Length: 95
Image 1 (tube, one colour):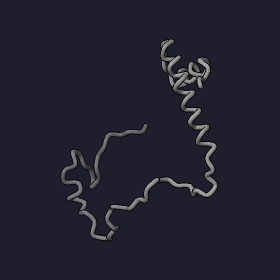
Image 2 (cartoon, one colour):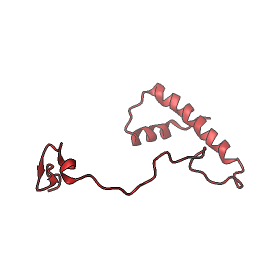
Image 3 (tube, one colour):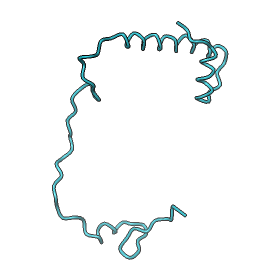
Image 4 (cartoon, helix red, strand yellow):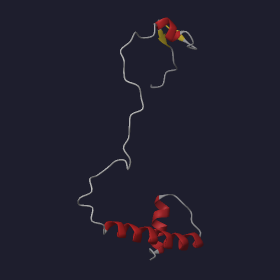
């Protein structure tokens, strides 16, 4: 299966790509194969398959949050390149 060259040109224009005539021909065939594959997938009966976000179970590998004493202000600012009145001093970003 092929898709029309005009569609390949339209997709290339949207992606801001310049394609040679040979590339347009090749992508016409390749994109047609992709569309044909998706059509095959659409024929599958997935009514009893639950939606998933991951194919394998995920496990959180982070440690538990534990409340503890926070870092003293002086220690937090110790290596700051610039500080002022107990805060980090950074360049102004917004007008």
